[in-house]
Image (cartoon, rainbow over all chains, first blue to last red; front, side, top):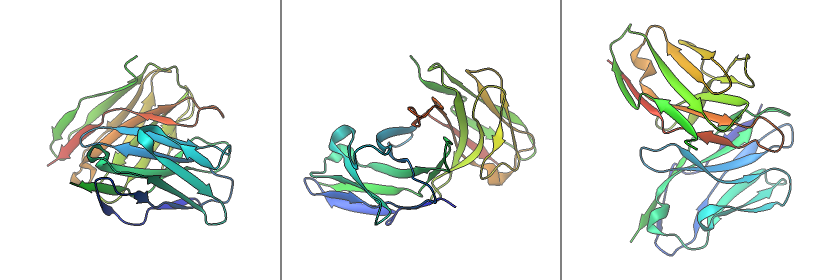
Length: 114
Length: 114
């Protein structure tokens, strides 16, 4: 069965520091992987997606993620945090093959310190 | 394009009352989804509709029913609300094809059951 684990429900970084949000997945079939961001009192917005093309995926707002099959990971990074990056981030993986359902991780709340 | 719209934005119900959450999308998407979001649990799939005329249970369907009214609209009904259904509900849609796995989310409905 597919599953997603996000290590660290809360992460704090200083403004200008590297952002690293961790996501590990379990899947019996090649997965499609996604990162979403949720700002307070809003819906989820797609940051980036991996769909079996390039393993290094670039998204919006300077974020990128690398698919590592050997480590079953899809960690999200940004070289320099900005105050506006403070939000909750969710990793998601497709369920099964040929299906468009997701399983979401439990989320990581990012706090950016001035 | 409005994207995915949800009504109402907020609702307070008493235990045992019923209500229907409405969702509509204007992106000509085939697939639609209902999730609930609870603190520390991420998003959990309640029901989904892979295409017009079909609906299927997700991870947490008990206490809910859905109707795919047409390609645009997908409603979620609580027949007899319980305090455990206090949550934020999100509707999402996706193209439902190999080239369009990503889901687009509405702004959410915050439901409190007293």
